[in-house]
Image 1 (cartoon, rainbow, N blue to C red):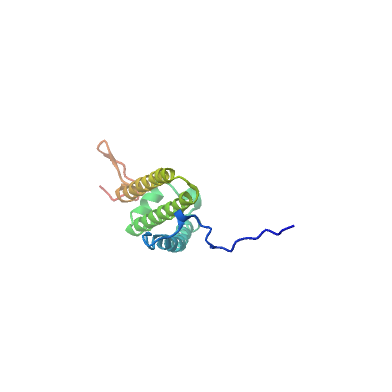
Image 2 (image 1 turned 45 degrees about the vertical axis):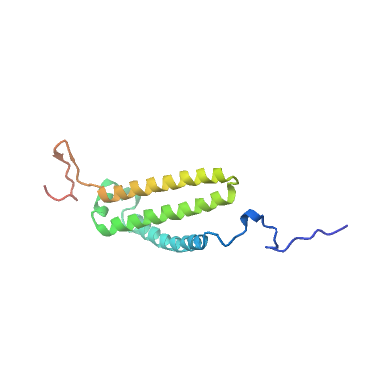
Length: 155
């Protein structure tokens, strides 16, 4: 009985359509790989500090309400903190899903439409999240009546 042989890795069995040429996109995939590693490390720090300060150091889940968020976002440091966390998480996740789409979508048209939906959703979420963070008004005036809480300045 003949023993089957296994070709050595990278022995030329790669389909010609996947071989790199001189007209390749350069270092994009390497930079995307590097971004995933760096953003992952930064996100771990951002998220654990966020969880520690909001849940463990504070009053736990019971202490998180509209007033808590309003008081937190009154400080520009926390606005920037949450903005960086939002942007990095969205871009990190988008890059991961982009890689999955590249790996599993076989047809170019399928890959194009999946990435189009992915990028559109990413832009919408980043824009809306950024708008919420910077236009959030914890002391709204509704129908001419100021809804003043203890964290709002006196009218």
